[in-house]
Image (cartoon, rainbow, N blue to C red; front, side):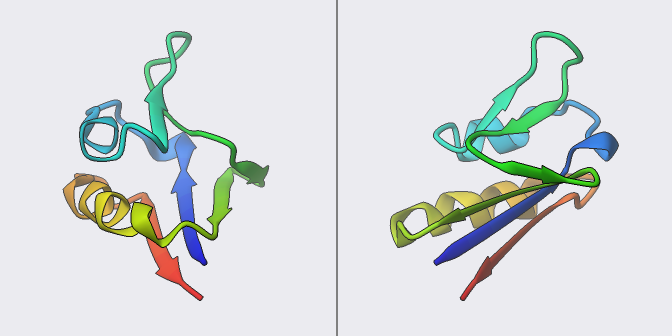
Length: 76
């Protein structure tokens, strides 16, 4: 299980997450911030739990590329 968490409020809209993991992230046309697709929002933390381990490398690259370090990727 891959667990991805995004602190959306702190997003600066750099678009790196979309470049590395376009199947998990999109940029909002409303505010220019990242959106973690199919995620659940709890107090500003948007979390996606996905059993597909194939998304792990792309999501790790997105997290590493984020200049404000608001994306975390874990495996459970």
